[in-house]
Image (cartoon, rainbow, N blue to C red; front, side):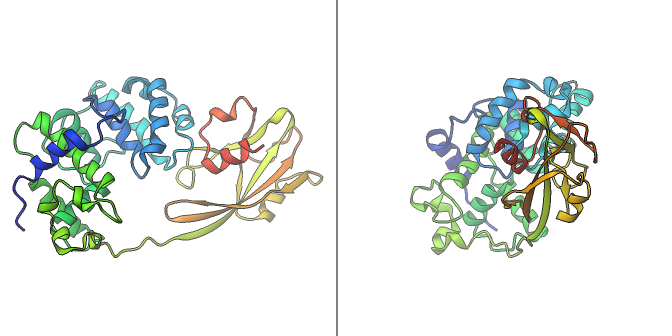
Length: 343
C-alpha cells in the first residue's frame, strides 16, 4: 500500500492551529500527568474525566504519593468513573515505577509496556508525548482516521488485520524534529478522530488530510473502519441489601476479586430475593425499592434494592457498619452510591 507523502506534516500543522490545546493534561511533558490522563480516558469521555483528573492530582500530586496511598483511598477517589480495574492497575503501576524505576517513568514504550495497565498504545502515547519517541498510538480514534485515509477495508475484528494497519501507522510517523513533532502528531490524530473524523457525519470539508483520504475520494467515509464482530451482551438480575441502622449507618462489604465491582465496597449482593431473605432476622422491617438497570460494557445488570432496618448488633454476613461520614469516601460502584445518596 502506498502511503501518502507529507501526511504527518499536515497533521502537525493543523494540530498547532486548530487542534485541542487547552485540556489540563496537554502542553506538559510530565509522564505522570500524561499517564494518568491516558488511563482515565480509556473508554471514558473527556467531560467525565476532567473533574476526576484534577481531584487525583490534588490528592496524589506525583507518582510517589500515589504509590504510597492505600488502595482503598485510590478506589474511593475513582468511585463513579467506572472500569475499576484501571484504578487497581494505576496503583500497582505507581508502586512498580517507584520500586523498580526509582520513581521515574521509563522513557521507551517497550519498557513502559511491562508496567501494570499499560498496553502498547498507552505506552506509545506516553513515550511520544513526553520523550518524543517515534512510536504509533492505536486507539479507536486513530484506527478510524487511518483506516479512512488509507481506505483500509480489512476487518479490524481480526487481530492480524489490526496489526497490518498498525504497521501502516508506523510508516506515517514524522521522521524529523521528533521532540516537537511527535507530540503534535500524536495529539493531532486523536483530535481529528474526536472532532472531525467522527464515527457518523464526519466533517470532511474541514479535514486537513482530505486530499490524502481514500475513503473521502470514494465518497463513503462512514464505510470505514470495517469491524464485523459484535459484542455479545448478557443480562443478570441481582438483589442488593440496603441494610440500615441508627444514625444513618449502612452495612457494606468488600467485593471479591475477580468479579463485578472487584475490590469495591458494596451493598451485599444476592442472586435471588430468597437468598437475601435468608440472612435477615425474622421480624426485620423490609421494603423492596424500585428496581433499575445499570449498563456495563458487556452486560445489563437488573438491580433490585431491598431496604431493611436492622439492629446495630446484627452481623449475619461478612461486612461492617459505616456511618454517614465514612461511606462517601469509600470506593463504591456508581449504582450503589446512587442508592445510598438517595437515602
